[in-house]
Length: 307
Figure 1 (cartoon, helix red, strand yellow):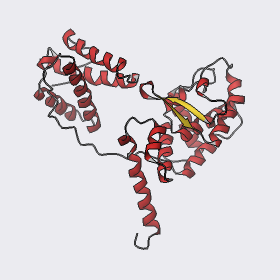
Figure 2 (tube, rainbow, N blue to C red):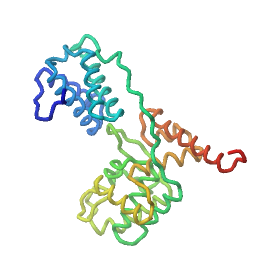
Figure 3 (spheres, rainbow, N blue to C red):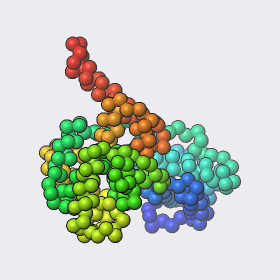
Figure 4 (cartoon, one colour):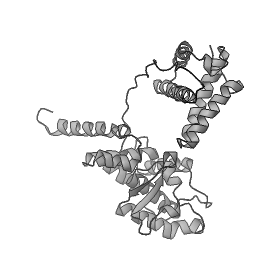
């Protein structure tokens, strides 16, 4: 059965349960807007498909229908990670409706989560990071901004949205620590090294004043004085990689991964790295211990006589 389209209106009985779930996730769980949008997309897609299969109320939802949907997604060549995400979204919505007394049983309870192959994130070497940052060493306002932006991404292991949304009130006077606001509007304080501090101070005292007045609350700005957004950030990181002659695909998130990897390889405590990255679970941070193992293996192969 083909999936439903965005033109198919949801039955009020199905839409009400969906909106109730999303409202609870927004208000009580404090989930980020992007996360809520992803849940909405996954659940609306499922409900439209199920509606075409005859589902009229959440109470009619049974395990075979869920299995058929996951099979249909695989037949559409959806990635296994996508199928897993679809199941998680549905499972969370169902459990919410059970807690609210709107459902009596969980049709997803006995369904195993898809087995995912854990991919290690791409990282840069310390030398590659140095080349990337040095590519923005000019005196123009754009070079000053790009250098400060990249330095903060790497020095703090920040998400690109966190740096784009950084406000002047998130800076302490000596620029030793930044206040970052991450997923679910959760804030954390992350220390910043000397080189990043110098680059940020130079941007604030010189380049930024060339494009905007001090009344703007955002730290990083475009040529027109507007906030620096994610799209521009991706473009500038790509431009810096080209200027540095790095023949690998680099995104702002690559610097976040590199930050964590270099700390772990240097002997940093995993819990401390978790706090700096803003991970809710230590399991998310544990992927970098696998990267550290690969680093140790490469050293062994290189230097051990039987490597």
